[in-house]
Image 1 (cartoon, rainbow, N blue to C red):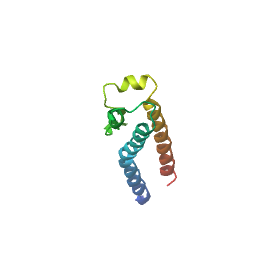
Image 2: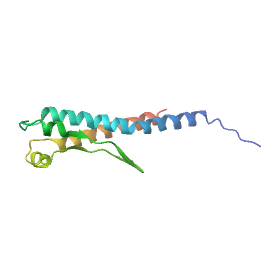
Image 3: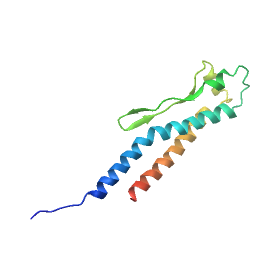
Image 4: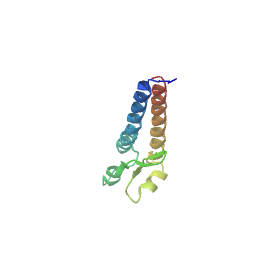
Length: 115
């Protein structure tokens, strides 16, 4: 006796999950870009030269195995000094972005699970 299964829905879910995973780097980068823009806009330091504000950025997403990493930082040598004095909120903004991403990806996992 042959047992025949229709895998159409399984393949459709697999394709949707793959598309969702392919979007992870773009979603991460966009979220951290917004955090960088917010930091550059809303900092507490005097922006005398404009260099520190202009150097605030989100790096490209690096993927390795089951991890994807993006950095929120400022390129100027003195950025850590300004941040440590509490005049930047870059660490807080990175943590907020991480929380936003966790919620987004949990929601996407729930959505995929309900298909």
